[in-house]
Image (spheres, rainbow, N blue to C red):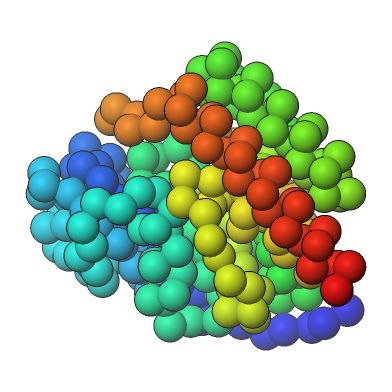
Length: 232
């Protein structure tokens, strides 16, 4: 097993933000507490409600970007990060930031991707339609990519920099799915780690129908592209 020795100074926590003034402060406070203020925090922001000011006040590095969608923001945040361990999260208060040290420990154990599995504990706070959709996405992705995937759209994952920089990421709404499907199909070491999932702070920006359709298309596209790549 690949043994690594990163600590919290080697962690970047990254997120995209769009009008999350109600939630981003508590999320950044939780990151500060979980990492003793040692992690780099990168927020790619497209807001007009003061989200960026709140993030800067709490020490995050804010990268301004015109509204371009979820994936465009998260992808840029991953590339803007400077540390070898890059942890994605949403800025809506749903993910347990106190698990950051656990994710770091798993990367040190040799995992290239540590994926937070919200569905393992039931995700009771998730709307029923979203929960059903996420289970369906996981089932389809598992069949198509040939690996058992439990939660293909989770927003909380840790990545070793090699996995991020060696793959060309193409998706927007479906980026969360792509960020797990492509590494899985390329043989990267993946750990699916159960996490708790909390109620959202503020209002959701994703339409469950159009967003779900885009995610489904991304799963199909990424799996097909990776199958073709394997045949070359």
